[in-house]
Image 1 (cartoon, rainbow, N blue to C red):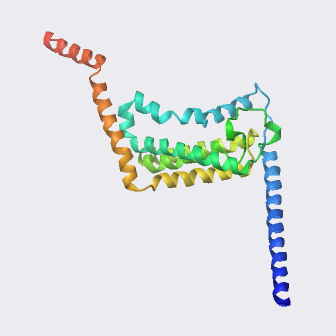
Image 2: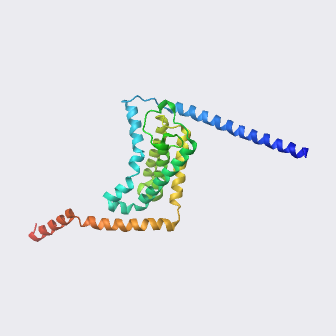
Image 3: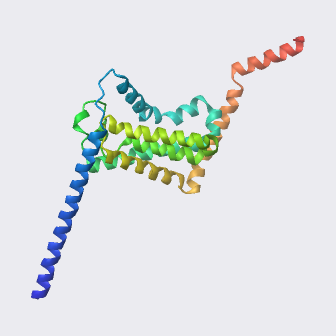
Length: 245
């Protein structure tokens, strides 16, 4: 009995040591993350060229631009949407998946954003939390899906260009003080994992989603060919041929 009690106490002490050790490691990593991020922060003053450049990069990775993009392309350019329907469908599903994952993770960790730039920027709901970076996850989600579906069209230079955009967008989050470096790395990894989940979804599910979209796009393309402007141009060409011009 005494041996069992002694072993039980030993195990309890070992568990406490392990917990304290893990807590100490996380604390050290958190401090290191903050130090690296503070060094990467550029305190650009409003109105300067650096500030404007960082804001442009931030805007080009903003969800308010990318989230409605698949719908906008389908509505206003059905022919282009038909050619790139696999990419557009993957982006639409990926963006929704990304919002859900970000919302859950941010709500769980609740890591505050860096204090040195907390007031610069609009944060909605769980987006006020720092971990992980939504810009980074979205940028690398787009990169992975673009390479998966449009690699031949992009070519080697295009792939490098998209990767450079994703990396620059992510790095700018540190430069602006929006996120810590750890948030950005976690966001980039999350985006790649989300892209993998979308790309390797069951084929039946992909087919079930893509077929109705393809049918609608074909119908919209046919309707676009019969638009009033197209009909008038065709009639004009026939009239010119008839009159000998």
